[in-house]
Length: 87
Image 1 (cartoon, helix red, strand yellow):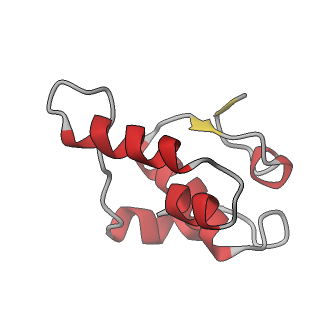
Image 2 (tube, rainbow, N blue to C red):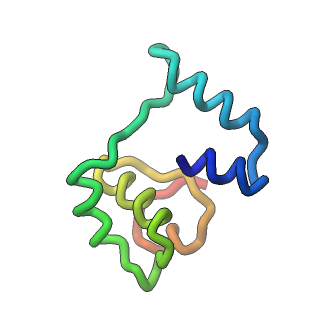
């Protein structure tokens, strides 16, 4: 969803979305979809609203937290939320 949003805003090229969709659709690809489930909704509470005010960003951060994964981001607000980040 976030990649689609960034393409629509003109911040990423359409080709990026197409490549990601191809990787997700390829069983041998390195990407997978992660569900927005109860664990993620509970993890949102661990992402301080004062630090990360935008709900879409909080959901992304909470997803990484719930699944114990580092988040690839250069967003300074998300990086300040005490998550494992790459970039």
